[in-house]
Image (cartoon, helix red, strand yellow):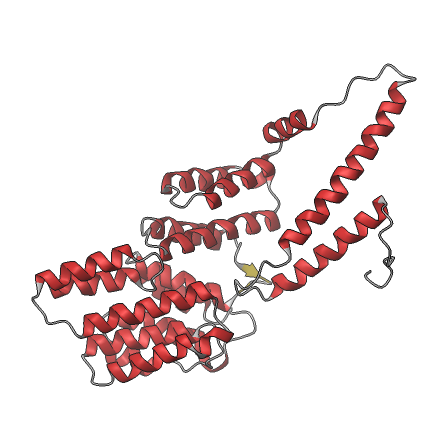
Amino acid sequence: MKNNKSDGREESLERYRLDLMIAEEKHELQSVQNQINGDLGIPELINSLDFYYYNYRTELANRYLLQQKGLPLPDLNTEEKVESYIQKSSLLYQISAWIGDLLKKERPSPDEFQSLFQLLKTQEKCIPFQTQAQLFAYLRSLCTLLINSGQMAFAELLHQIHQDNLTRGLFFVNNEISPNSFVNIVQIAIRVKELAWAKAFTETYKKRIIGGDKDQFFYRFNLSHCLFEEGMLDEALAHLPEASSHSHVHVIIRRLELKIYYELRSDLLHYKLYAFRKYSERTATKSIPASLRAMNIEFFNILLQLSQSPLKDKARSERLIERIQKKKLLADRAWLLEKAKELG
């Protein structure tokens, strides 16, 4: 398409339509491996869409006005009236706009999410399967971001959404689930103390992972996480898989390893901690978004302070709790809070 486009700046609807198609294709290509880096070409796509939409709508309106010169046709609605009409008449627009409002808020309430969740469930028959999957993906991603920012009330809601989406098959491609989802679903279930459910899920879906699960990598990670929560620390460490430093799950595995060594009061903890910080500050810059790196570095800082704190020090415990609560980006916040409270 780019090769067929004129080098000049001649303006036409066809030119704007071609620009839109090119921008859309670039966006889709960048979205395939989205690691929260860059803008995915979205500003360019929106700009191209606006140019095409407004020019095409004006062209159609002019044709209609010309027809009105010879026929008694009703007046066209203004654009403001059109938007109001779509708002009232299009369920998809209502839901998408609602999601947009939630995304704009720094601290949306769980009740707002719950209401939207219920609307999506009750209108299931009105929304195609693929569109449902896309809309729920927005809800799950936003819940995860809010949990990571310290809004722990969303964990229970996210677990409910996971259970609902599993029942309706929204996670599956050809009856298989992505490795990311296989791991994330268990992490949230454990966070809300649904350990038995997490173990049952892991066993049920361990052979249904997209691309297979070479050496039972993802299964072993979920099992290790469950064993850790059960207090079976040596067993959890034994099942913990190794991951390439370029793998997106490498950091999650390393954090779990650090938590195990902390609970074991292992002499290896500080060595592992500093290796983790070095990775987060250097190697991870090539493969991990800045916000996630910041979460990991803050995790290191707090865990280091915890490891250097004496037991039964109430004042120290309260200071650490306050620091944790003030952090906007912090990995494993709930566990760190629990450990800080134990110091007092």
